[in-house]
Image (cartoon, rainbow, N blue to C red):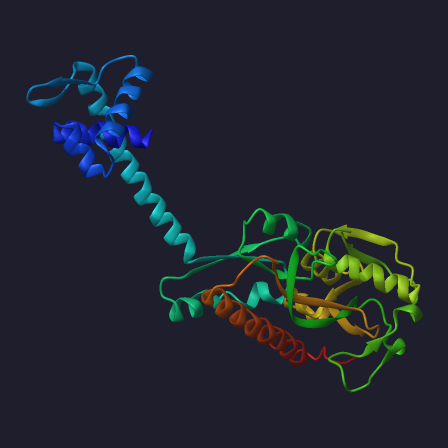
Amino acid sequence: MERDIDYVIAVAECGSISQAAEMLYISQPSLSRYISSLEHDLGVGLFVRTINGTELTEAGKIYLKYAKEIKLLRGTMEHELRKFKQANMNRIRIGMTLNAASLSIFNVAEKVKQRYPGCRVELFNIMSKDIEESLKEKKYNFVIGPDVEKNPDFGYERFSSDPFVLIVPERYDISRYAEHRGDGCFPYINMGKLPPMDFVLQEESTSVRKGIERLIQHTKYKITPKLLVTSSPLAIQAAESGIGCCVVAVGHLAYVNHAERLNFYQIEEEITASSGVVFLRTKSFSQEEKYCVACIRNALLAGEKEILKYLKKVGKMGI
């Protein structure tokens, strides 16, 4: 179709098949055969040969009118597509699960823009269960969240391995089960030695719940959830309301609003929650993306320090 339009416009503007052929860098016989074939397919003649050259027929004038409009629209379309491509080349879309990163990396967009003025960073909340599908569908350049376990299609760069933290409403006094070692943020607790308590659990599709299941299996501690929630921030809110205990990663402590109502214990098992960048293994990172990842890593670690500083300030770093 594009060639039809370009060839007809060239012949009409030149008024000569030979001159049009020269301009198009093809032979005159080839152009003549092409025009004849096009006229056959359309069922009408577009040109008539005269002693003065080649002139448009009435049908040819109609064809030329719309051919020029189509060519103009095609040029506009290609221009818009180039603009779109350029804009998307300089746009970094990042999916984030709910953890410390959610509250600490919002200044990253400005930092990236300062170094790369034409680059725009966009942040989106994502559930851990949706990481794989969203990356395969290329909704995001990469995702900040937990490891995608045992899937060879994805790569993972770990930022940190956080211990799990047991959050306990003050109505429970389990301080006699805790051990102060001096090397952790909170007193250590062995879940296998705890008495029965009410628990708020995250739904099974979350990465934290999978870690909790590993803890339950390892410690043989039986948990019958009093309430199921969709995320760790909601589990923390439920614990603050006194509904029950919950287990979260250190990064989720950013969502604690009423630390005075809670006590915090570090679970001593070596099972941890990881945080890092998840990406398609076939992906090649641009310089802008590499810088963005470095900024996020620093912001994430700094965010966790701020969380712990806050808990220390309200006297919740040790019981």
